[in-house]
Picture: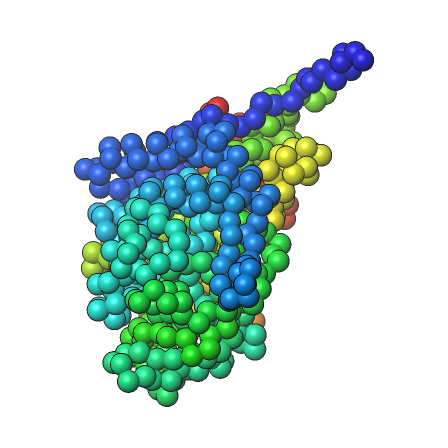
Length: 547
């Protein structure tokens, strides 16, 4: 049979064999902007190595395989003994091993660590987002454990290790460890204070026996977990190891794995504790307070994860349209498609720029900068609310740029779309974030002052930004019905913050387009509605991945 009718033309080459880090100008410029110059050469070298790995055919195949073969729960062995283990495809372990070795759990151990980790997170999660969940929780567990210095001394070196050491063994025998968490229960959800899991003190100092059911337990094959349970003094944080010091298995019954919309490579389980041994972390009744820094760190990772998804979606859309022809010319040269691509690129760059600013603030706050710590108190939940909310419509529009090809699994775009809502739900959904911002505004005046100082650095540089700041202050002055208006208010906070950062740091065409469309009202509700007189071609070219 002749194959002449099957000649393939007008299809773009795969977006592979490129440096994911170097191809992202918003990322590379942000790193140079915020990182100590003495650290830049080392950081660039590390991120270039990681970026080339992320853009390789091999890593992209690992991502595909990890999602095509999701984790499988084994509750019992062949003889009927309870084992409660989760089996993963080898691709999962390769992805996770690379992430650990790249320092995605090691931010606390080196100068500029949060910014360097954020850049690596943005690069590596573009390969496959699911395996970043255990990496995120392991990273975020460190500040919580520091509330109990004796536990931190034992666990922190393993959590910040760059060695991936998989398998259920006592922590003392491992070169590296991963952490998960189990907070929410069926009746409570985000209201973790409604938990009924019970903790009973044992004779050993700081040891308790936990009994209860957790509706969500992330990464159940981790070495340890941070768990909330109710002790005599109230909700308390505990460390639950999977394996006890003598090698025995701690009672940890995985009842089922959740069948999720996306994030399918990652195991999320329902677990039960039955006199499960645990160590208290922090004081009784202070469990929520103990976990605040962990929650803030994972919320930043939600921003980073959504920014990474948007960047990969833009890269795929611009790459496709650069090669695909229709009606006599390349799609990227069509005025309307160019408008769509530029609008998507604006959203992506604003998310990346904001995420990197937050990461840099973490480094400064860790160094004792009180203003940066206050700034994070409002900026993190506001960014978590807005960036994660924008991710799903953004990825859906990018998918449409590929037409029918984008709707087919082989393109990778459906996986991005399925993944896109998770960061908005995880660590407190939209309402939780909006109410948290209100709480900070009402109780912590230094936080809002720090926010105003941040956006005030570019006062007078763009009239639309100045007007938006003035309108925001007016809205904050009206307390009537403020809870019902919380989403609108937090959206404006996030947009003003993004606008100020782009005016301060981005090329003029990027800042102008963002302020016109997001702050000045010169844009529609859908992507692709930017004013046609702006520098759209330059914005698209800036976003184009180099393959």
